[in-house]
Amino acid sequence: MSIIHRKSVTSFAAKVQNRLKKMVKKAGYSSRIHEFRLKGKHPLRLLGTPKDPWAGSLEAGSHILFNRFYCEGRVLRNPDEENGEWQQGDIWRADNLTPKWQQYLHSFCWLRDLNRVVDRNAARIKAITLTRHWLESFDHWHDLAWDADIIGRRITNWMAYAPLILDTNDLIYRSKLLNCLARQARHLYHVGDDQLRGLRRMQAIGGLIIAGLYVPYGERWLKKGTGLLKAALVQEILADGGIMSRSPEELYRILRDILMVRASFEAMGHKIPKALDDAVGCMIPMLKNLLHGDGKLALFNGSSEQSKRDIAAVFAFADDFKDEMPQADGEKSGFRRLAHDPLTVIVDAGPPADTDISDNSHAGTLSFEMSDGKQRVIVNCGSASSLPDMMESDIHNLSRATAAHSTVVLNDKNSSEIRKDGLIGNGPTWVKCTRTSKKGHSLLEASHDGYLSRFGIIHHRTFYMNDKGDDLRGEDILERRKNSSEKPRFDVRFHIHPDITITRQGATDRLLLRLPTSEYWQFQCSGGALALEESLYLEEGIQNSRQIVVSGTAEDKNIVIKWSLHRIEHNN
Image (cartoon, rainbow, N blue to C red; front, side, top):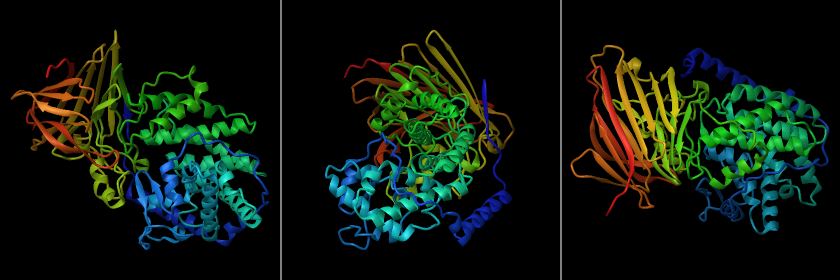
């Protein structure tokens, strides 16, 4: 049996102390003393450029050529221009952009998209124009543009796409850009990873290492960056290849970053740190563990499906690991996979991430997703990150709620508290999980205490999958551990992918789920009242969908709800 414990919630005093530390650090970064520390040898060229194996978006690159920006399905238009275009350096003077758009712009990750444009000369001119105007406004420390993780991403993108932004006869501009590059690296050298966590920490460290490898006189940066990387890999990457933040998308993005760093060590003739190889060797199988049959990510803890092409590129980029990788079991990270071709079930059998790194965490403990081949059947609602900004703010917290996940909800309350500051507060303090397999049959038993303090109830959930991949059975037990006058309502929710058609079979507790391939699954349940309700699926905008709900009242000491999904032959 594996048990994953969650740390207690950060105290109010600790929150105040952390805010004060940040204020003091920012004051120091804007001081003349720190500006003096950023002076040093002026590089005249680069020693090389790192390879970025992930292709950008031609559509997004075309938008940039026409003075608009496009990211995750959203177009950023200039509200002060009738045609919505951003002229010259207007984009860098805009003061009403959301933090996400600012991070996207200042990280220069849009260079990847611009690099896809067929008209190479037009792309080069646009890239140089935008970079020149950025230097006019942000050559010195800035509160957001010079955050350690933003600098790390910007250095990496400037280096990878140096042919776009340095291919010019304007020697003054080239000199200013290279000097700014070195000054940003010195800033990272002095601030380190700036006490960041997770993906942001890796982005800051990655930028420092990339600068140390490819910028002349960067030996000190490389040495410090390598030391920071070794420490971060120990603290952020779990033994099974999962990560502390428990976000599949963040795992994917961290892996992309460190693979690029690893390739750069090798390309520049440096020995790859063993800790880096060890981490990649564990993370690759864990990423595979979190993919459905369509080759895209499961939707847990703020993740979106991501590009199948880009995910496949990760495995191609790490091809030399394919014969060495162990089987991922998910005991440490809490994601457990049951699979027998073509059926795949992925279960969130862990508590939310610790409070200080829980900004992407959802209250979805013991939720699951199921796919049949390339078709998703049972899903979670997903992440609101791809929605327009105003709409995202309204739906974001709803998408993080327990009710937006395929699991049990009591009294329509979240199993984990979603605080006003966006972090996860009180919730499950432990999640237990046991897995057994015999002759191709798999059994997964899990439980959590997220509802114990409020309702005196422990939620137990069991999954069984047969050896043919055509029979999935589940059991939810609500065990009363403490006496309580409140008898909460329970809802066992199964969110259904929008591509699936659901019909009720007469007055029975049976439903027929029809896949686009004309295959059928029959859903059956006992222990509660069966209903069909509306739902939403937050991939590629907002899609209307349905959800199966099994409801009742937890009046007895133990409530047992049984459900099953069987693939069946159906004659129309």
